[in-house]
Length: 106
Image (cartoon, rainbow, N blue to C red; front, side, top):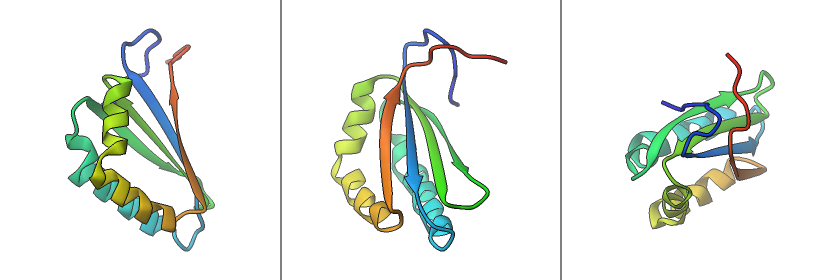
């Protein structure tokens, strides 16, 4: 389960996908399958969440990893490179960005 806490020794990655209402569900299916079958089983994976805006034109993915290198190794694997080529067909663009938590409010 993701943990949002300042100073936590982990890597947070937020990926945004620019999509269309016509392909949003297909994109979500591809992302869910990637997490169910591959990503969640990779070393260092902590947790993730998928979010969709009301217009179904944006998908946001929040994931956390024990180390930056764990995320990078997953991303560079042959399996994920293959999946990302398919995901790229379902959206206009996507960009994973690594972040550090600066503050957290409950």
